[in-house]
Image 1 (cartoon, rainbow, N blue to C red):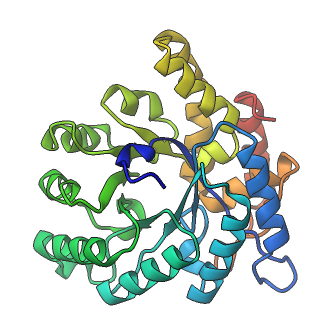
Image 2 (image 1 turned 90 degrees about the horizontal axis):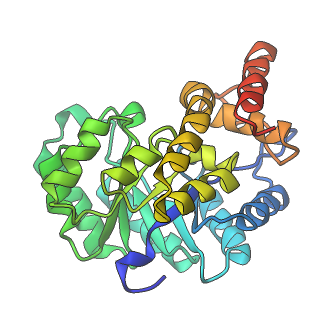
Length: 300
């Protein structure tokens, strides 16, 4: 990855992890096949082991293997980011080192959650600073209160953004007011990525440098076009495209998460497959909902 942190920008897709439907083991052939297909679209980077990648369900050894499989097919000019969240600072530092050795260009780190209510803003600051100090590759701070139940305030984000090895922030809160507070607190110096596919246009208006979008797995061409339209100043067209895509984010990603994305990939003829237990596949009724939403968004 370029030393200049501006290399981290644009459209990133947080890829799903494919599992063998019989054994439940990771399925590397299908995993690589999907990534190759996404790379044929205008995506700037690939994220592995995020929420959509069921990172919390993976063993550390599995993640190292998947990093290698991904690096085999992701060319040097595309950025490869690995989710490296964990409950102890020590564990996250170890994972960051392993993923860097396996080819990651950056790591995406969410705050510890198990003792979340007992951790002060200073505790979170010290955690991220220690990880950033030790990580061989740049760190992206991952704000995902839906799953971690931890909210990082704007002042802390501004402080973290000044660390030379913290390359940016991914905000998946879905709260535009908080996103604007991050921008204001950093005086627009934060490299902010939005994680909500319904809010990309609004986030770009607020100063986002990019998006890490699960719906981008189902609509990579469409989000690539949205970026192009925005950069070309065709704001009305970009806004109209965002309006078409927003319901799909809300009713597939927002409602069903990785389960919904995998079902939609199967409908598109890609390698979706089952989620890992205890997550269960969508019911027939839920699949009907996903199919309808995909058709209405013109993604099928």
